Length: 247
Image (cartoon, rainbow, N blue to C red; front, top):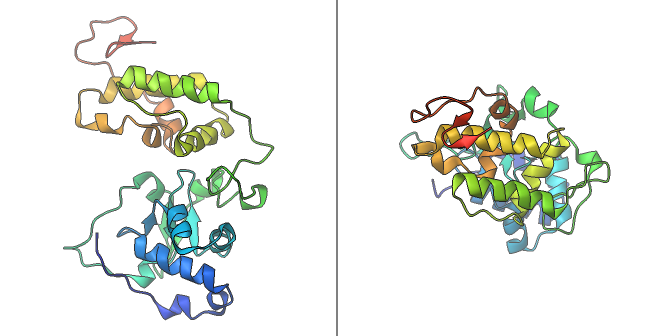
């Protein structure tokens, strides 16, 4: 990742930017400094705490569309490519592929949320229906979202750990946020188990096994995984068992 970042006065000298409190402006600059080469930041809350900014500063940047937020907790700098040009020989593509697929670029290079991302209830789109929370998430669920108890989180993550041989924790805030988002989309715990079965059967023993993790399985591609045709392993002789998994 490049170590130098630039800023365009086309963005930072505008009235809409300069009318924000200095703490919000400082947070914006620091988020830019911590972003990867595509403008994505995975630790916005840590950056906020590090410089002494408030939740309201982060919310203001979202409201003013200086950054976009995703259900995974990742944020992206809207005008990243107006600020920065990175040489191809030093550029490293972002690891947040799911989030990048939800973006398109206008003629000036600014990121815009694609129609697919707008159709999905991301924190950015549901800004008017959410409130700042006390559980260390950027936003907490509003009262009209389905309640999910800890037992459900444990059952889903225990199933993943059993099938994939992993050791993920059901108490992780990012994992819980992803599961809540999928339940809010109308999916249920059996859908989670089916996705786990399908992807474990397909990826176990391959280079893709490292992606048998909540942020990949339960992200924005969840529905496509759920509707994917199950790929039988080479060792399967028939029946309803795929890669050692029974359906």
